[in-house]
Image 1 (tube, rainbow, N blue to C red):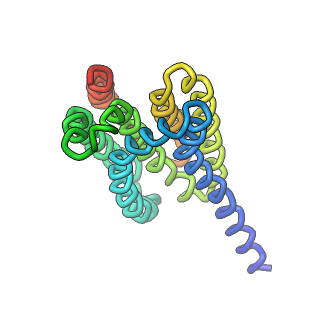
Image 2 (cartoon, rainbow, N blue to C red):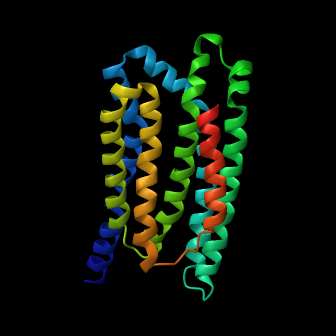
Length: 228
């Protein structure tokens, strides 16, 4: 009987993580299928080039996530858990947004140096993809709450919301804004997922976000996105 209980617990923990992973994959690739449908292979190629730079940032973020996963589980039952989680999140927030500000400010120059002039116009679509990567990292950070509390269904539900927002924004904006609509949809999908996770995970931990820094760095990032 004990083995059966353990198996049930493992299944209830693990099974929701499978569609959750698929949901993240959909957010990252649905743009390309829709671009191909609406605008053709050329637009898809430009979007693929634009994704190269955010992909590097995402790779670094994933390395952090693996380390954070272990630390967060270890600290979950400590008395100063909320304080520790808050410090870690605010540190990651400032670091990510600072890096993104630097990257956005220099993306055009990097494209001139690295990318063939035939694909140079793809630089315009990179800033929103950078921001999408930032909110993807934020979502992953909060997603740990579902794992340590063994309530992974929450991760599944929020991933589904992110997918639906991403697909909906794609359907609405790609015909209007073209490739930029796809870039924006990626950011919108991860923002919606993160916002829901912020409220859902309050039952597991309470992270105090430095709103002043978030607004300040977010404003500069948004401003640079618009004027580049």
